[in-house]
Image 1: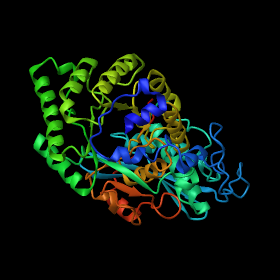
Image 2: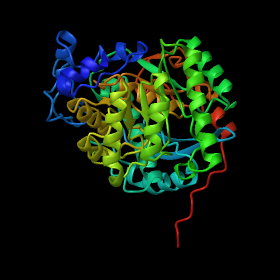
Image 3: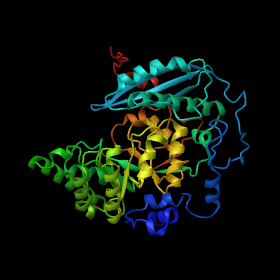
Image 4: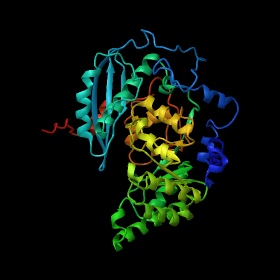
Length: 454
């Protein structure tokens, strides 16, 4: 089905012949823009909400709900009163970092900035940028968030953007998705990333966790089987043993979940072109939906990525990546090069929620899937569900399965349970939930703003 989608988008001559192994991607793509009928007309009308972001010049403005083309003076009646960062240790290896924004009407908006081993720096950036927001209207950015070259600063600024969007949607009394645009669906398909929740890293351990997730209703899963592999070590006996073990993990998972589930493999940039090609060959029996981030993503690897994409497509597999890029400008070189079949922007780094939608629009225009990266906590998850509900070419959204019970427990109200392979759009205004400060305080780490280098 996705091969047919590609044929309609980029032409039959260029359409990869993808193998279908399950139904998750098929169901989602049927809701995409690439077919005729009433939904296709809705997709063509869909635009960023001009009341908050300004009209999108690449799409006709949707006026069906009486939205004006420009925000009036009362559209944002509240001012931001405070912005602060909070970090919580939710497992021995994981810290989630959040941003809390409060307006002068007492409403609270939330964002998430989780970045491995960077909590102190994020707190520093939030503390530095918060004064420029306090006293201003709770008005989300019209443009990409200016994030600079530092990943921790990008995460901090994107989390502030999320929190301000949450406040603005609450002030209007609408869900975040309705503030951002016009949702294409009321339920978002999820795939289970079982990596961080799998403590037994043997093939048997991965298989057991995958079988559990599939039994819960997930029709697509992802694992990272090569996290102990380094490309430089693959010419050594130990390196080859680790690589072989990674292959065994993938094949064990495929056997455990059967042919009806889609399976993705994340390589975390640990391979080189030769070993990535070998990976595609050895994993052909696993019938992968995609191979993710096989190589470091630099200007120098664009040619290699394009060649690997061709090899993958010839085997019925997609190539996916770009989970850590910031702003559309960061994705454009990879889109221009034809490096990937799927890109994976993350609400925590992509340059703001409005920019996420622009990135998704650009992917759609180029016949590329846009499946947001979402392996962290509940606030990023809620924001991602709202965004994914709007994206036209989103087959499914990532969900970090089984890492911690705190995912649901930290929320200050019930959210749609993501543990069954799909998430309904959260009810209520804004994100649909925030965090319980008392519970958050029990998990708080002693994170201090990092000192600026001398």
